[in-house]
Length: 442
RNA sequence: GUGGAUGUAGCUCAGUUGGUUAGAGCGCUGGAUUGUGGUUCCAGAGGGCGUGGGUUCAAAUCCCAUCUUCCACCCCA
Image (cartoon, rainbow, N blue to C red; front, side, top):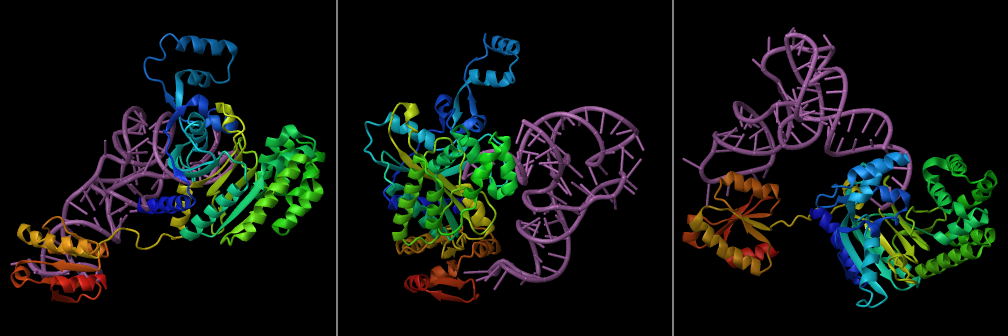
């Protein structure tokens, strides 16, 4: 928990610094607002919430019979759609879009918000994938300026720098991929194309070629794509080669946008590598412009942060022509990476500088007085809650690596002193309150 | 959704081709040290072997079902 909070705090501080507003939305949404936003796979991965009440009465047998007669592939699926109208959110972006539309009259645009909340996906959990996980989203909505993309890159860079992780920030533009689909004269294969390209790292060139053909892309087209997959050189060199290969209006626009972002980013001194990668795809349907993905350079792990621009996410909720761009940090994955690489700072647990041994009621009263004074001087301190055996109290202090142990027993009360023991050296001496304060703040 | 593993003490795991009283390390408790931890030594507590069936004279062990967690594919943070 402490570690998780550390990640959240780091992200939150970064967003605050760039003037993003905090926002939370309910865990549940109407299924109608969730469905159809995440591609066909996405709908399958939604957790549905069963309606309340006796929802099967008079309905179940008819639905089942109806589907049976139709020879439906999945009767359960049909039934499912009739008995659940709410679902758990799948990400934070779509509920955010819904929120923006609903409150459009109260918000000042461009609207920037960050949101740190759990999301749920009904797939099989495994390494780096959970049924429930936290996302930390930041979005800017109501502006199509590419400065926002740049700002998000800065935030990503800042967060990972502060967490002490070495990452690569990859960017691409959906318009380039779209241009590519037009370039091979199969614009309808846009989604198939991007999904295949995305697998290059995993399956290799041959695998991707096969994948593309399986998805109905003609062999000539596959050959035509090959040079795009092996662009070399610096970001600007890659952009230059792309420009020479592609003439479509749409693709050209994507190239221009990427170029503009990279030019802006040049002014910034980023700590991490910003790489333009025309192979970057991303499965979410709603992205239309720039897309981001962040990967650690230090171990094998899926992306730990991703995002992109969506030109018309609010359109489906009845608010047209509002462009937004956002990113999402995958807290759980970042946690896993930090844990594996042991990157969490050592002293994160709030731990006292001094612990007082509890000798009983009378002695504890005296200790409380001292504690009060220490705390007023901002010295983190505590008293063991029970008058347990000394040995137990000492090992508690030891296990929590508390630097000093203070003892106020009968003798000390009589003499008006405090016995303080240095837990590292084992040294022990008697001091008064002022000396104790000096010792502990030094 | 497809395929493969896993489940034994608080934790990490042993447990042979079914065979008496199910083990270890760490942790915990007590003692050596009644107001002194971290080191050492001694002793002790703690287990319906995931759940429900079945086979057998006998099941942690074999069979079936179910749940959990994990891994690969798909996809994703």
